[in-house]
Amino acid sequence: MWSWLFFDWAAQPFFTLVTTFVFAPYFASALAATPAQGQALWGYASAAAGLAIAVLAPVLGAIADATGRRKPWILAFSVPFVLACAALWFAAPGSDGAIVLALAAFAVATLSVEFATVFTNAMMPDLVPRNRLGRLSGSGWALGYLGGLVSLVAVLGFLAANPATGRTLIGLAPAFGLDAALREGDRASGPLSAVWYVVFVLPLFLFVPDVPRRSALLPAVRAGLTRLARTAAEARRHRPVLLFLLANMIYKDGLVALFAFGGIYAAGQLGWGTIEIGSFGVLLTITGTAGAFLGGRLDDALGPRPVVIGALALLILCGLGLVSIDRDTVLFVVDVAPSAAPGLTGSTAEILFLLLGGLIGAVAGPLQSASRTLLIHLAPEGQTTQFFGLFALSGKLTSFLAPLTVGLVTAATASQAAGMSVILAFFLAGGALLLRVPRQA
Image 1: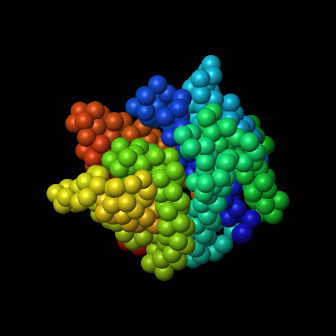
Image 2: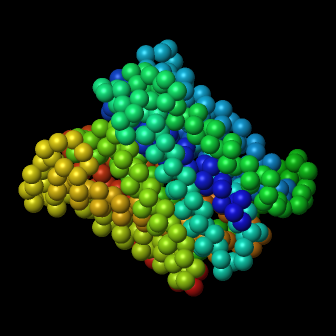
Image 3: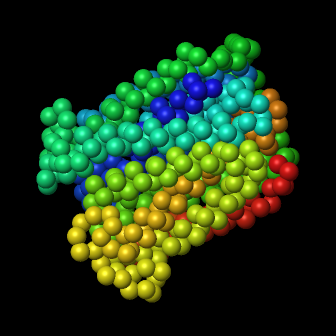
């Protein structure tokens, strides 16, 4: 079991370092012509990867169910993931093709790690009894958050430096002679994610048992595609599964947008820089780790459905609080003194932003962890991987919609808060659909 858990630990630094807190802000601020252009281009790359995942994940899941074995598929997608992460190092400011390279490598890495995750998730029913799936899933998310925390602290403390001062978060010169002016510490987040993954995914390949081979590849392709068509039809006939997949599609879109725009929102509303945003990421990772551990136990005690609904309710409340904050206002109408000095706690607005952000981090893990265990409870026996393919599809099919809506509303209103408030509608709609999933599921 522990060897399986280390997949989340191995993969999470990519999401923490590259997707959210280090490389993505670097791309928008140092590679793109403007932060707005960088945000748009990053969104296009995410949408392209999401579309490919939407098309291929269910097919690959069906084929894997037919062949039986999952490890070969995980290995097949691990190789391009590692190579793409390593390639991010070469996206240097001012270099020819840096933008194209960064976007292509990011899209390939995202595609690969998401596919590998489909097959890793499908191993869960073979590892523990059904009444311990919540704890297994929650522990995986928690260990992943912890891996993201350790990697983020390492990058902020020893690699990524403020270009103006040449010093890291803890006041050191970047390790290995990395050049702060060339943002080599930020670019190193890609190779670090690659090396980290290679080292820590090994226990899964060495010690986790795989399902015996059932069929050769080509017959499995035909059988898998046939079963996929049947799975889609069965999903329509299994109303609880269909409702859950639709709900997951909607609230996952909102969650993706919340994390994608969180750092940009903090920079615009509070004036935070890279160090402050990175430190905020450390806080979210700590609360996320604790929340995932607690959420897994609540999942086993109460069932996954109440955990997901409770997490969505807290996300709505905290999100409403966040959009009510700017440098000199909280709760929309309460005036507060602006920050007198750079930092995370220089004003009431920043303190409240930290508290609400910490709560969001704490419930995001349980939301995702309990979602995948809820699918296991809903999916017909023997078709887990196929339905995890549909699960990936529901999480990616409209992954462009929430970021696009945020961008359009922000442009129309010239207000970051108005744009971010759109995310709350995704949480509300997803929660409303989930309430229609039977309680006994």
